[in-house]
Structures are given as structure tokens and as C-alpha cells.
Image 1: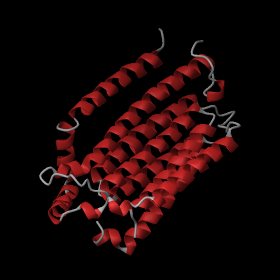
Image 2: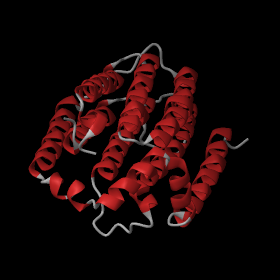
Image 3: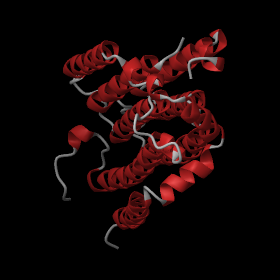
Image 4: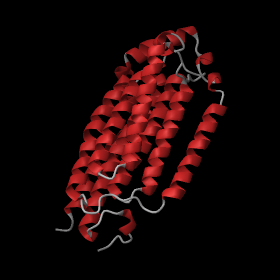
Length: 181
Length: 111
């Protein structure tokens, strides 16, 4: 993963453009007073992250991101906002801005320090043998069969648990919203 | 040259923004949107880790295990979708019971 397109200048330029887009949309999500506009910014952030997944050779996950997040979750949120929006009062922030800002900045500082202080190169391509590297390109260029095989072999129990979770969520959401009529 | 640390720092930035939003927003739906940002930040970190690192003990005949990080991210997406559906149901019920969607007004589970 050190040569090829990942090392080229155009890759770097696209990455920075996507990073700026994603972070700007995220800032809008937490700052905009109009929640419908905030939800639109959230869609922009989701799409930026989907494009970042493509840059990480995770095309299948990028499609899932667009379908589930930019499609389903954001539509659900917009429906919720439009049903119960408090247009008179808007969405004022609470009075925790200063401690929350300090906490977030401390969190960011710790994350950046740890990331920059760790020798990630010890984990990376050093462990790759030539045969594995060659096969890895095949796995990444044709990932859906490999993901399906992983899901139905190593991760069959979490897969069933996810199915149970979704069923429970469906029943629970209907039972909650329906009330005690 | 974009490397693992770029993706991890971006993920940290997104996580901090989402954390700030989840703590400062008064509207419960806005808090849900910020929590979605947190999930997405974690997903970026997980997928980047899977892409840029290789397990030393990787068996050459089971190369699919290279995609374990992507499968983790898939499960995170599933849980996040379930969370937002159930969260919205709770917010709608709260609005129906108290007439407000502000988390600062939520101090009772009963009518």
C-alpha cells in the first residue's frame, strides 16, 4: 500500500478536500440552529465519510454507508425533526458550552498525541510477505465475497445477534410510539 | 503521502466535534445526530486500522481475515441504525408526554 495510487499527489489532494468537507459539515451539524439544515449537513458528512471509505479500499462499506446513513438514517431523522420541530424556540444550546468544549479539546489532544506518538510503521507493511501482499490486492479488489464468507463463518454469532437486535428494535419502536391505546 | 495517522487524526477530530455536539445540544434529535457523528468517527478509525495494518499471524490461505475491520464497521452501522430508530421513538414519546424535546426538560419517565 506504499506505492501506486495511494502515494500520488492527486490522492493526497482528494483526501484533504474530503477531510475538510467532512469536518466542515460536522461543525455545521453541531452549530446550526435550524435542525433541518443541520440534518442536511449531516448527510454531507456521511457522504464525505463514504468517499473516505472508497479511498481505504472499502467500496462495499461505502455503498452501505450511502444506503444506510445518507439514505435511511438521515431520512428518519428529518421525518422526526419535521414531526416534532419546535419552530418557536429553535434549538438553543444549553449552558454547558465551556466545559463541553474543554472536554472535547482535551479528548482531541489526547487522541492526536497518542496517534502521533505511536510507531504505526511497526504494524504495517513490515509484516507483509510477498505472497500475502499479492493475495491481499485480490481480496481488496473483490471484497463482497470475502466479507460474505467472513460474516457466515467467523462472525455467524454476531450476525444472528444483529438480526435479533433489529427485530427487537422494530418491535420496541412500534410499541413505544403506539402508546397505550 | 496520506498514512494511517492522517485517518486516525481525522477520526479524532470528528469524534471531538460529535462529543461537543452531544454535550451542548438541547434538542434531543440534535443529540442523536451528534451521536451518529461519533459512530462514523469510530468507523473511519476501524476501517483505516484494518487497511494499514496486517496481522503478523495472518494465515496465507484465509486472506479474507484482512477484511475483519470492515465487518466490524458493518456491525457498528447496524447497531447505529437500531439506536437511531429506537432513540427517535423515545423522543417522540417524550414529546407526546411532556410537550418538549429538550433533554434539559427530561427529568421523568412518567407522565
